[in-house]
Image 1 (tube, helix red, strand yellow):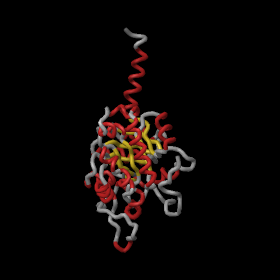
Image 2 (cartoon, rainbow, N blue to C red):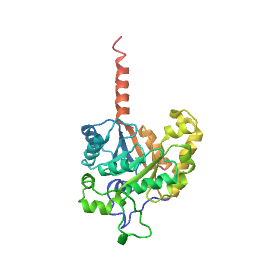
Image 3 (cartoon, rainbow, N blue to C red):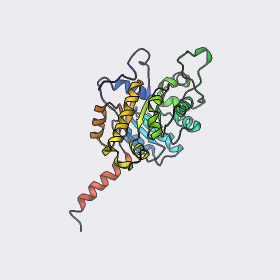
Image 4 (cartoon, one colour):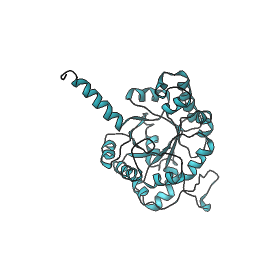
Length: 285
């Protein structure tokens, strides 16, 4: 299946930083962009996972046990390893978006995106205002406040450089995981400033009236996932998918998805312990 590509390498994209740069570079050679989900707090844990060879580490502030201060330390630890820190915010609130980007996150993932209006507001929260003299008809301006000394460091920039380039380099992804979001996904994908639609399969399945964890076996849910993927590509945007194994990543990449995670820290802990305890049953009563 052939899709249009979101961004082609050019003089305008050659200077991209952060996750935008990673997404472009993954095209040559062609490969999926793969990261890990971080649900537990701690800079040491974040640093260790970032050293494993992932393209990004996502700090989960929606369902994870990660508060504001822990988010800041985790984002800094990940960025220091040359890996893109992405934060899943708990809600599309202005102050949350500001705190997240001020921590130095290369990108944000916003859950439960259901309408075009919500998507436009999210973009405005994530973008700095553009001075009138520098605006063009295609400028995407916003209401983000200026002041964080931490964000420039995460991009390896001085404050002035960061302010001048953050609107271009900050990556904005939204999760389509409600029936309303599914029905509006084509228009959400067209919103200027939205870089990726990301499928939350459990909540999408649940919203459609099925058991959340059965999504892989329900044709209607798989058709909805394909619809979101097609909407992303038709709008020239990236598509992301939640995965829990290398086999799932391979299958979704072949389907056309660009950006996927390989499980999570708590998943790895649970699976390893379960496997090893199962082996012990052979040598203890």
